[in-house]
Length: 258
Ligand code: CIR
Image (cartoon, rainbow, N blue to C red; front, side):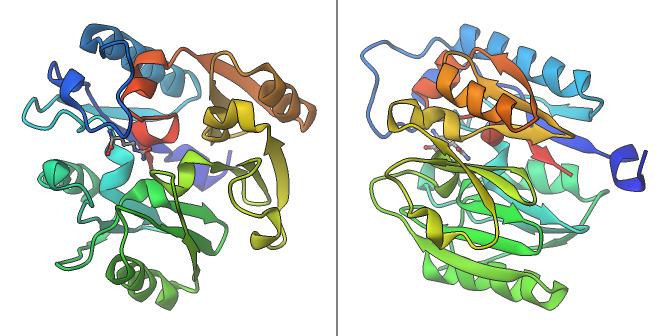
């Protein structure tokens, strides 16, 4: 086992009882059931533990209905963590608890107004960060990401987004050479030197998966995407994310893997 594998950790945060008031782009007809989301979140944590990760689960903070979506609060690579300034006003204030949890594991950098950035806009493939310019991540946020990670040898590539919450709503990393990408979202040629597994448009939600050591956590109910992922040699674990999805959450957004 490599040194990196030995220390793999994930930071998660419990789903608050106020989760039914999470920010949503287009409200579902069915109301969000916080207790069901809490159970789905517990299953997610168990799945991460089952993959050998040490998971630190922070207590829920009911002041912030979206605070289980820890991915948005920081981006971490090679021992450096950039604590975000979240793009949604109602979410600002979630960051300090995540920064405190990351502090023992990473050298932390911060960003200040007017910069905004959500970690859901940041896709890392090896020494590249693809970063979505979205409703949540602005030019100053992208510039701050570049100023922190370019000195470490990272290339930071901006992706203009329209009609999608975060970059990682339509794509995610399986390994440093392989990614999932939803058909009809970003032209595949935008991503250089990477194997792209196409996700059919009618399964676009499954473009966001979390890959850990050859196993891919994916939402249940997307058989075409599952076939593509398995055919590429990854093991798949399906999780029911129905309530998480109602709040615009997906697989990566519930953890920060350090
Ligand atoms: C929000 O609108 O901010 C939350 N309701 C969903 C955030 C999902 N985060 C992510 O995919 N990284």
